[in-house]
Image (cartoon, rainbow over all chains, first blue to last red; front, side, top):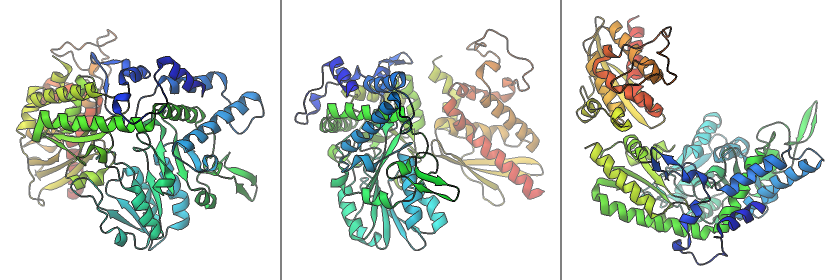
Amino acid sequence: MAELTDSTSRSGRIEPAEAPNCDSLDVALLRKDFPLLGIEVHGHPICYLDSASSSQRPIAVLDAMRNYEETTHANVHRGVYAIAEEATARFETARMKIGAFIGAPNPGREIVFTKNATEAINLVAGTWGRANLGEGDVVVLTEMEHHANIVPWHMLASERRFTIRWIPIDDRGELILDDLDRLLEGAKLVGVTCMSNVLGTLNPVAEISSAAHGAGALVIADGAQSVPHQVTDVVALGVDFMAFSAHKMLGPTGVGVLWGREAILEELPPFLGGGEMILDVRKDGFTPNDIPWRFEAGTPPITEAIGMGAAVDYLTAVGMDRVRAHEISLSSAALALFEERFGDDLRIFGPREPSARGGVISFAYRDIHPHDISQVLDEYGICVRAGHHCAKPLMRRLGVSATARASFALYNDGSDLVRLADALEHAGAFFG
Amino acid sequence: MSALEGLYREIILDHYRSPRNRGELASPPALRVEGFNPLCGDEIVVTVDLQRGILSDIKFSGTGCSISQSSASLMSAAVKGKPVPEVRDLIRTFKSMMSIHESTLPAGPDGVDNPDGSSGDNTEPDVIDVDALGELAALQGVVKFPVRIKCATLSWNTLAQGLDQGDQETA
């Protein structure tokens, strides 16, 4: 917790949790914790609106990683000397913090470190999927999944010959659950994103989990977009697996997490083979390690895991209720501002109600291609994403090849929205 | 000239707003090739008529940004009616312009000099004769925006694939 104390004393900002109120986030002060937000791009202060792709890191995270590197680094779970024990302690402490952050009942056994959310989903496909899915089986996905929760199942389906069914979306960008019971017939697994990285839609994951379990299926939730921006409680959601990445929640790249129910993880075979994941290796075979290390072959991303733990500390100190309230307020302001400034020239994808969506706004502006919009915005120091957002089935459903997307984190405020709107106007003028 | 104006030359915006040779030729007899840019989701369809070694007609369709659309339009205007070997040469020249560092191009009107002060390495095999590219030279500003190079080359790669396909069919 040393790094957390550093961060709080630096700004004197963090107070005990209070009633959710976006005004209670002092964004100007928070921004001082993020060195990158102080840079200039093309002569303008950076306006970073791409946190759904990857977020920026506060000093507390950078310090925790640097401090570990400079004072403690050794391999984990190996040495009996002092710094090796300290490294292991910091690594395992990060696991416990991250577990607590998502309400995991038994973090020490249920939090598996992976490379990112994508690898976490591939881990489930490669272990649970390989052990349980075969010809005639059904996996149900939603039309708004990220490729990370589609392609692993396509890859396994081509080998195991199970069927993939799709939960469709309506024109507001919300899941159509009227036919869910029929879709779930014979299903063994449901894959659902907690929050669409394109539409911002927050899905009724608890409701889907309940229906899936009623039909005898397990649920894997993609929490990459939701975990960084709101309170997560895997027990209340009722899911069986949850995947998320550190780099979208103020942490570093190179580490992510798979959470799984303890009883399910215990039954799974290993994922990758190598050191760390074994109890014993003989010439005629091996005995796999206990969970969660069974799934963590080789030296793990130790520095990054510690950085992820520090990111969780930072978010916890700010308060996830306050982060969520702030982002609802920002989304609300953005929707109103775009409507006022651009009217019908700007089409926003996804739900209209700010409370039904996360801090992600995908849009089409007149008929200017998102790449061109993004290029002009860059000239003004504004970073937005343009493209298919790794969700091509959803793009086809929306009838577009790409969208422009502005996404928020706790360090954005109304001034970012105004700069975005001003630059969009310039783009409009430029392309006539 | 601002960086943006260097990228979006007037001629590019003109071809974007009023694309030449947009549409699809009946296929067959025309060759039909699809190209994708996995980065941004752009898709392009190029249809070409090849008659007695001449690219007698070409049309393109699909969706894309101003760079990919104007590049396709400029390309169609440049190759239409040309003998296939000349078209291949043009594809090679255009792709060289898109793949080399800007400093190996001769200094243009905006005075791009080699940053290390040298006058360029004359032993480089592919010093580009930008003048020979005519209107296509307007796209050389794209080189300064590496992410957009794939937008500019999408239609060219697709056409090249079509010509290879044509070779196989006549072989």
